[in-house]
Image 1 (spheres, rainbow, N blue to C red):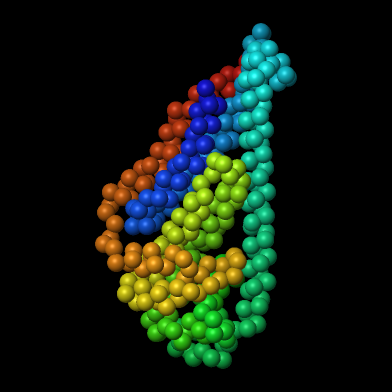
Image 2 (cartoon, rainbow, N blue to C red):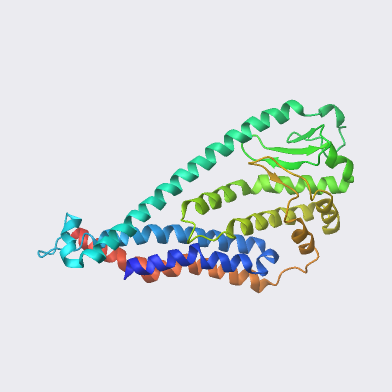
Length: 315
């Protein structure tokens, strides 16, 4: 029963729950609380998947006639029956596969992304047009690079040596205040390390099979990340100034591994700037749900299972 509950919980947290949350309209009005809820769902899904596998492993090592755990899972065929035993083994193997894919994907995404950023950072440092910036210009900062490119480019490169990259095409489009808003937006990404949040969701998305995972979860999290950066940029300027800057940079692009100020979410984010401040109850409900998703399954399912496992080990 424990394995079944964890299995059902895993499927719900990977598929239906993210799909429903990605279709909701309230998260964009309370992005910080919504991001906490997203992270709670992702963490609970991973923990539930591993708990399902461990619960099945415990069933394959049930107490023998003398009360001690059996040392050979094959001995459980007679007790469970071949069909149920084979199902347990298949689900346990799937859990191990997902765990292996999650670790492999996390390492692969991290290594490839950092190598790509390092090479791009070196190129940007070479192409930097420091001679075009005056000492009182918003671009005159240690972490900002301006490149002589007519195409609109405005993005950041996270990491130990952070960079905010602005092209001349963007500089010619924006006023001084709008340029300040764009730089504040990108620096918000760098301070909050939004790149790590996105990497974790990319790894989780790739680890689980396609037939159970939500295809909309990653896009919803990317929108929330941009909304959080917009909130920080508004503090440095005004909603109107940031809105004009977003519209002007809507077609701005970025290389892989970087985060651009524009993109397909621009229209949604501009409309959001005109919203009233979100009601407090939205954030309260989201934080409460995030805590419940992590705490309630643990109290209701994990503790009894851990108690039983402890009894088996000490028998």
